[in-house]
Length: 111
Image (cartoon, rainbow, N blue to C red; front, top):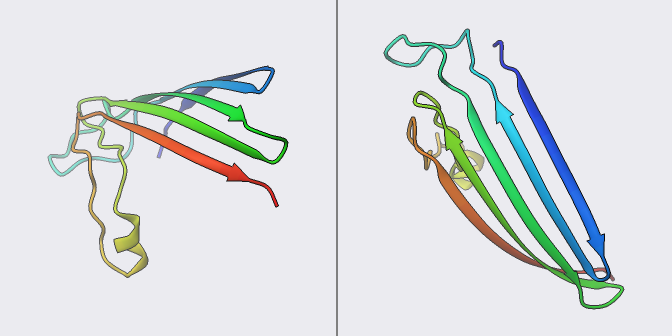
């Protein structure tokens, strides 16, 4: 398929904090068609923000936020990947034109 995308990311470190921001734009797929035979208008935009805090030299905690905005014919979204691993077809959690947001948190300890 004929898809073009662009990505811009930055990282800023100050003391024990690391701040990240990322913007990604996916272009339209000009070859593939949906069930109605339509092409184009299948791009999406994504913005991600993150904050990491070093509790010590080996332990850090982090929080992140990601928002995806789909064009009217795009259905990019999280999927039930566990179902795929079991040989199923999986479940898509975003329909065409819908967007979604994801919040995340983590603790990393290096042994």
